[in-house]
Length: 310
Ligand code: ZN
Image (cartoon, rainbow, N blue to C red; front, side):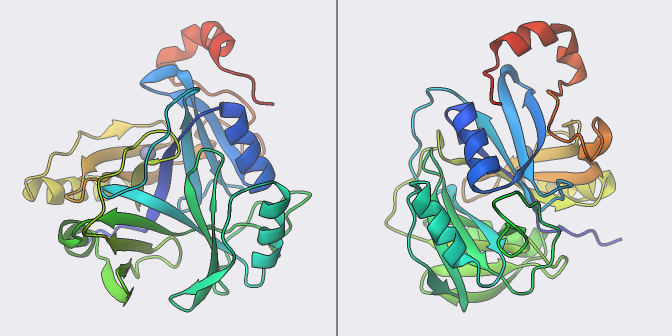
């Protein structure tokens, strides 16, 4: 059976201070903290997952907050900008809100016929909010951000590259994306397998130098598949291209594989199953510190070291 990549599953980035990260994403952007766990390779560091109410794939942004990490630098061989979709007519609300909270932003502009604005998070990670009248995903709302303005989930991810052929090849030949349109040096690739989080923009910047992945940078982009059968189907396809790819890894909330695409960005492929309600109820999501089984016996020590966020 033909297996499909179902758009973006999650995006993972690197932050500095944990509380500042938590306050910005839950408070200013109004996302839901859907899972509070630790870096499975470094249990003295949090791993935060922010998303909509259910943590639906395509809405999930995750962070490793490393206190005191040096700032990264945007450049080629990197995912350089995270696009969220917001309701039509909401950009004035967002502009006022970002202004009020001293966030660095640009006034709304138009790209591919859609209005958007750009802003930076406290670590310098770059975002775009794009008004999207067709989006009807369930939003997470807060006292300050209602349905008319709340973020739906991902609109796109942007990758910057000197020459886009290698990355474009993976997107079109392996992942089933098609080049849908171009504006200047921005080339939009879209999959019709899903309605949302279906866009990857490749920005071709021949003269730009390679970025440095550190604080305020995207660490990896995870693409979504239905289940482990689909996961292994794509593993075989990547292996057949002669690229290195990991074995299947159990991430508690999904199964995943990692490989570095020819343009230099770390890609992950992640499953829908088992999902975030595997160890908390829908109501409880994000309220407890969840540790993978191998660290449960060290809970007291780990809780003593992790910074308090709320
Ligand atoms: Zn990941």
